[in-house]
Amino acid sequence: MTTRDLRDTAAAYALGAVDPAEQPALDALMARDENFRREVEAYREVAGLMAYAAPAVRAPGSLRDRILADATRVRPLASAGSRATPRPTASWTRAIPWLAAAACLTIAVLSQGRVSGARDAVVALQKELTETREELALKERTLTAFEGPEVHVVSLSESAGKPNARVFWNHTRNVFIVSAFNVPQAPKGKVYQLWAIAKGKNPVSMGTFDTDANGRATVIVPVGTDVAAIDFVDLCAMTLEPAGGSPQPTETPRLVGSWRHTD
Amino acid sequence: MTDPLTGHGIASVADQRRADDARLLARMAAGDERALGSLYDTYGAAVYGLALAITQDPERAEAAVADAFATVWREARQAAADSTPVLVHLTTAARRAALASRATAGVTSAAPLSAHTLLASGALEQLSPSQRQAVELAWFRGLSRAEIAHTMGEPEATVGTYLRTGLDVLRHSLTSGVTSPVAVSA
Image (cartoon, rainbow over all chains, first blue to last red; front, side, top):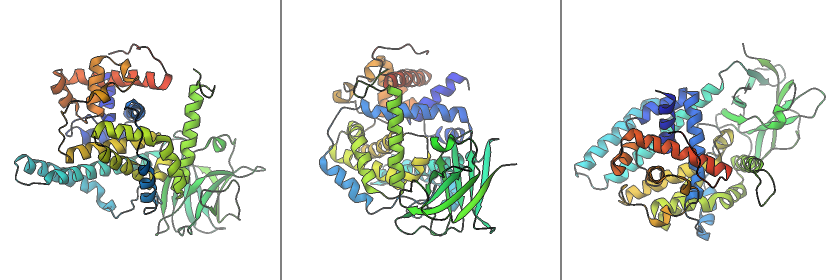
């Protein structure tokens, strides 16, 4: 594929204008090819701005209330990749071809006019398929965030105990990947907050996270400019803070560790 | 280029917007519903306009917008960790829901775009007629390259080039405020 072909395809992919038969191969390309992913993300940004290309209309006043009312019934997910409703996460890779086959079969039945109402089933299956593919792409992004020569890691533990969390700092991608295990879910109204600590200076917040009911979390957090500006970070610490985080730690760190390079 | 309202550079305004969005997403991830309200105040009208342009039906447009904000609320932590602008998350979810809603309503994808949609945007005025038709059929109607090629009577590869060069022009226009056509290699 030439550079021009790649960019043509990236534009079509960003607009959702690729043929269904091409979609799986391009999803895989999106997960493994950095150049293609960059092109797609740039075009998706343009596509997002096209919301302003639609006619200027006033949304009904009740819509805001409806959205906020819906939000009171659902809490944001606690960790990357998980879902509010049970999903076949352990078998998501196996589910994709079955979902695709089910969608195709339903389309075939629909084309023969044998089942009324099958259109809804097609739409639901296609939506499920798209969400599963996006979930796969997210997992791929999480994995690739661990890669690269410029990765530092810190193991966080109670004093001299076994580690309860590891934080990877990918300087190339400018993200932290927080992997927590055996960390009890934060009480309601509280979150865990990570701190970058340089000798002789105040701790700087790296971000907040929470674990799931099993005490686990895998979260990707962008590196803030104030953290990136620190010349040399010695330690990483974790405290329990009010929801939204605190400007400075309000308790003695529960977990702490020293940064080191990956081998 | 300077923003006429703030006096700041356009780039710094965009950076500030992203920083504000990041703070809202962080608060949403912590369960702060007021942050969701602020996000709606910022982008609700634009997302609703997009959904209405696709569905041509206020009730279905509302449902698509509610679906989009619910998605971003539910996945705020992931969105906060992602470099993708939150508006892209919102428009992607709203467009998907709106196109699905069109399908369930039995509206055919080949239905012509309304004059209201076609004449709406100064940004789209920057495109050639062919670029504009291809981009609008893809974005507002959810057609594939092959379907657009069939509709326009053009080779599929040509349609791919229309889409790419059309987005290149829009990127230049929407991000820099350029008002005259710009040359983009075909």
